[in-house]
Image (cartoon, rainbow, N blue to C red; front, side, top):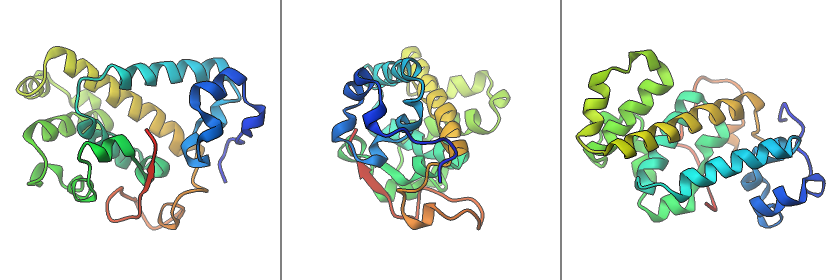
Length: 198
C-alpha cells in the first residue's frame, strides 16, 4: 500500500487531469500524479518541467531511458524499474540492453557515449562529490556542452523523483517481483517489465 493516499482522478484539478490525459491513462501510467494531485499547482509545475525536458531533448530517447533505468536501480525505485516507456522501446531499448545495465562498462551492446553517460549517472547517484573535471572531459568526448547540461538535468530529475517514488512505495500495480519487501536489492534486469505510453 502506498504511503501517501492516491487521490481518485474524479477529485483531481480539472486542468491537471487534462495536462496528464489522466482519464485515458492506466493507474500505473497515472503514477505519482495520483499523490501529487493533492497539491495541483505544484503537480502542474512538475509536469511543465518534465514536459520541457522531454519535448526539448536532443539526446537519444534510448540513452535517456538507459540512464533512467540505471538511476532507478540505484534509487531502488520499484515502479521506475518496472516500467518501460513505449517511445524508448521504439528507439531501441530492448530487454537485452536493459540487462546490459547490470555491468554497463563491460557491455558489448552499449555505445561508448552511453557508457560515459551511465558513468556520470552512477557518480551522480552514488557519490556526486566524486565528480571531477575528468568526468566532464569524458563526457565532452561524446556530447556538446548543451547536451551535458541536458543529461545532468535528466539525471537530477530521475534521482529526485525516483527517490520520492521509492519513499512513497507505490507498488500495488507492479509485477509480483517488484512488490516483494525483502530479499535484497531489485534490478530492472531479469524481471518482468510493463510497457507504458510516453
